[in-house]
Length: 539
Ligand SMILES: *[C@@H]1O[C@H](CO)[C@@H](O)[C@H](O)[C@H]1NC(C)=O
Ligand SMILES: *[C@@H]1O[C@H](CO)[C@@H](O)[C@H](O)[C@H]1NC(C)=O
Ligand SMILES: *[C@@H]1O[C@H](CO)[C@@H](O)[C@H](O)[C@H]1NC(C)=O
Ligand SMILES: *[C@@H]1O[C@H](CO)[C@@H](O)[C@H](O)[C@H]1NC(C)=O
Image (cartoon, rainbow, N blue to C red; front, side, top):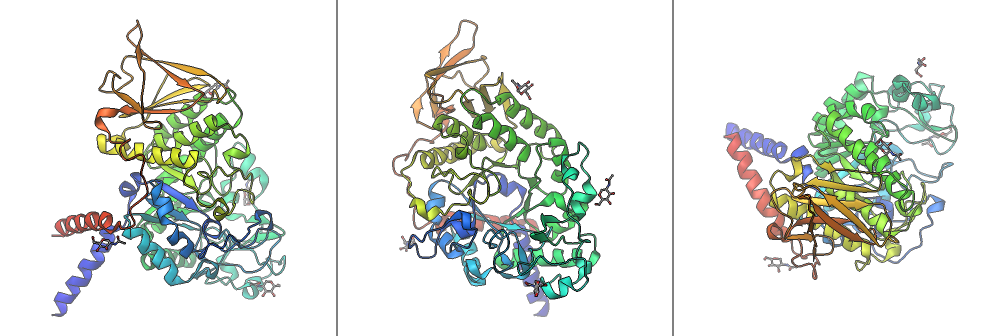
């Protein structure tokens, strides 16, 4: 009897581990990123939200639950939410902690976003749709003491501040800010980056002493409990480069789920070692090349540099460029439309994030054409958009998600086949990831026509005669050239995502794409198969 129930418990525990989402599971996902406070109100009364004030505007986890149809309707199957733990209260020199990156108590949830039960309901609501929950976490630092610019050199500082559970001075590095030159130097002072404090004298961020074994144990236990309690499927790890690299392997093993770190750098060489200590990183080096390629105005950016950044990450990262977080916007960077509102440039840039090797990430508001520049302007309230789905970028993003899914089902190796580039130049880039061939240009919408000349083997396994553009669902006019290649034209600088009409259903049901309200079956079947597979391997 005792043995029997012990085996049952062991089996259940094992099945839970087995079901935890890993790198392979996440490769196939498409992520929608929200700043919880700004994405959706629990009861949408159209409350104003002035981003310049840097205050809580009222978004919550219940708000996210109510808008899952909106997110899933665009084809996303994972949601990344901003940090969930309790943050410092009150006004600092930089406003309130509405963004979540100023932890104060790791063991309770931020009441501004709802209760612990609300967060569990969000997790369940996502899982009921076969979607994943990614939670943003901060290990590197705690929030500033908003009551006063405190003297952190005194040992009593932390006793009065009382961040929980790290309330003693030995839980923190000695107070000194990371020096500006530690970043800018050609050989960054990594010790300073890891052990110095972020923030400034108005809002110093106590830097957690992740060299202290007690802190390490505490953090590893904390993350394990957080993941288990809330059914978290993946982590986005804030300021990962500010913590020693060899802290991460045990931490992510304790978490037991997929991890994607923020390593802010434009240098593939600098970012590369982090791909060995966690599953994935946000693809910042390519982001800088992408943003520059399309934000500088028609014909001005450099698409070769985008190809070069990707080729470098394919060579240097542990898993190549596969499963990197591929993004164009986020809560820390100016939105593309703060630099250009040329729709052709915007659509090309967004298309890239879906057709390269990484996991696509769309930052909320991008689909509504938001134009906010630097923090805090880029954290607009989405309820002010009305969540309208009849918008060009909503449709564009929906088509891109659909094209990627169709490519996955047409080619079982799609996700692991590295992209190759066909004769890239500064203004044009053909991205091949069979069965997709994506044609990007930064010529801009006022350019009447752009013409690609492609070699005879451009369309893997086909002669190009039955291609459609997954973005418009129009048949593509491919002209054979005398030299045995192909020529394709694009109007008004628009991107094209080509794929054989014969092996895709990418354009079926295009007209009526509202998601089913009743999607539990989408989850039940994979869950059942997953469990059977787990049990089978257990036996
Ligand atoms: C912050 O600092 C002030 C002044 O030193 C202190 O009174 C207060 O308790 C500290 N803690 C918090 C959480 O504000
Ligand atoms: C790097 O930073 C650490 C910590 O701030 C400091 O002690 C050390 O002197 C710095 N090294 C160099 C070469 O500047
Ligand atoms: C564009 O980027 C490529 C690859 O990095 C580089 O070789 C080339 O010089 C750049 N062209 C311009 C005009 O900056
Ligand atoms: C969901 O599906 C179940 C079983 O097919 C059905 O009984 C139920 O009425 C459906 N609910 C909705 C909201 O459509």
